[in-house]
Structures are given as C-alpha cells and as structure tokens.
Length: 134
Image (tube, rainbow, N blue to C red; front, top):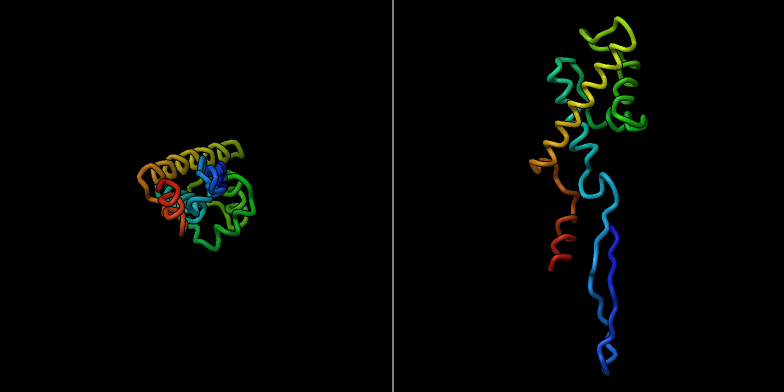
C-alpha cells in the first residue's frame, strides 16, 4: 500500500497539514490472500466438477506455487503424482487441451468468488480503507 499526500502550510501559524490524494494497491494478493482463499479452492472445485479425485490442501498448493502459471502447475502436479483416471492420455495435445479447459473453468470459478465477495480481506485492510475514506 502506498499513501500519497499533498502538504499545505496554514498561513501565519506555520502548521503543516497533509491531505490524502490516493492509495495505490499493488497486485493480486495484497488485499486478500487470493492464492490460498480463492485460486486454490477454485482449482479444487474445477477438479471436483470434472470428477478428477484431486484436492490441493494449503501445504500442497504452497509447494505448487513454485511453478509459475496455473496450467503449468496442474501439469507439474500430475506429472509428479500421476494423471487422474479418465484424463485424456491418448496424446499430449488432448491432455494439454483438457488442462486448458480446466484452467478456464478455474478462472470462471475464481471470478465468481470475487464478484460474490467470497474472498476474505487480509487483516487490517478494511480499517485502512475506512480510514482513507474518513
């Protein structure tokens, strides 16, 4: 969070006052732990909908975050533990297409969670916003 203020000096009293002009929030994960509380559950829901018998707990997902990108993360996971039963295995292109479809579904679930307010804010965020508005 960056707070930016303008400074003015009040006449003969010499008192300096600041007025907040903007709050600049950084990127994904600043206001809420979106990896733990949104992306991970969205992946799990997409897996469940596709009956893939795959669940990522917080610890496993934390390890998987070492792999950049959701499609790459799924691929790395299943390359390590084995691909789910019923997953297209005839050729690499079919498998990549299924991973892409799962990722698109995960993204839709994630966006729905955000729109519905289903992702809790990090501690203190609401206070900062309320103080900024006041």
